[in-house]
Length: 445
Length: 118
Image 1 (tube, helix red, strand yellow):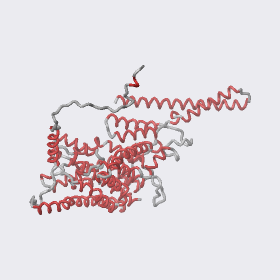
Image 2 (cartoon, helix red, strand yellow; image 1 turned 30 degrees about the vertical axis):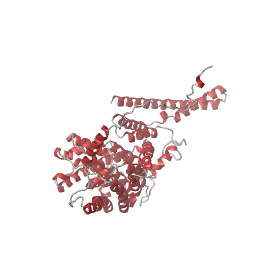
Image 3 (tube, one colour; image 1 turned 120 degrees about the horizontal axis):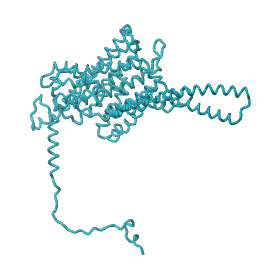
Image 4 (cartoon, one colour; image 1 turned 60 degrees about the horizontal axis):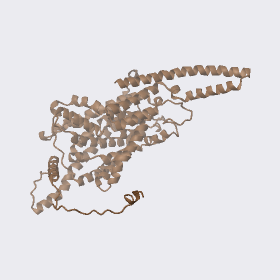
């Protein structure tokens, strides 16, 4: 906390310096004007005074372009948010691979500079480097590449060995559709509401993919109005809640389960044959793509990555997909998503509403998974029951929510390891949220 | 401040939006239910041949309900036992000790002749 206060103090000092500069500069400007009128009227200025005024103009221009002159409270607030993200990642290890690039992106995107000066710096300025990198977000290029990497690194064995846990991944998707209705009630248009609802899937790439298609600021609605650009707030909300899984989920898990339920031991997963592992992505691809072709960019890449891994003959490609490729895309995606939170675009009431809706969506999804596990237990034999904590992993924040389930399970019974079981609804949640995204896309585009 | 500006408009939800939500969720659920049924039956299909072969050879009589897989904890125990066994093995040695002349190939990098001063 000491460090946080220090950072806040530094930001406050910077803010006062910037306002002081603005005042001083204003005085200088008025003085300059007076001086120039005198110079024009008298017509007797020497060369020294001319060079002096030129130097003063140069300095004044320099300050006009500097961050101190262009800083607004919004910029400073967003810089604080960026620093807070970096702090969370380093101090508490909350998704550092995401929060560090996003946090630095927020800093980069909120460095104040003179707008409309043709500097081509901002992410929303045509021709800037950041805008080119952001192109992959707005066109939905990065999310499928991330899915390729996820497919190449995910072991679906736990899901294949216990397919009934797949239903928990389906149940948790209730958050998406309830939040969709909630967003409509709060005044968002149907495509925007669909993009906001997907935050409940707790899947960053899916949220970016859907918002880039539905709430991209380009699509024209039937009444002639243009849909709002909500990619930045939705992506930040999705990734923030993914990082905050260890904070958001445990209270809901404790609230909805009894001590007796939390200590339920599940049967160890069986060994899955190589053939089954190879068949899984092929059958999964065909099934899901036929049901929801709109989700093909995501699920196609997910299962393609998994085929690379499980086929056993494309080790090099699988290695690249799960290491270098996904790392490169994560760096660029995180940075550009962070930079897209430019204060003048991001700090709106709508963004705040999206954050509130996202949190609700996430909580409903968690509760949906847990409650469905309890319902399933009503029909299962005593020796084959499901630990309801595993239901919380139905949200597709892989592998964070599975890790949270493991930790909560260990708190209830130090010898009960639920990680492998929780991974099954976790990866099913990824598939479920991608299918949901495809359905929303086909309904609302 | 933001809470004051939030307004709830329930009329925004029309029949279409409800259909999107309900049908959408039903499709997601049914997609995963179909996958559940498929993956639940794949091991049975794969095992049919193995069962038939084993029964034909008369090596092993398998009841319908018996599963052919080995549980993960049994696998782990076998792996551990094998690991410990192979870890304790020693290389077989000939017990013959001899002095062998090691012939080194000439290399200018290690040649003494270039290092000597006249």
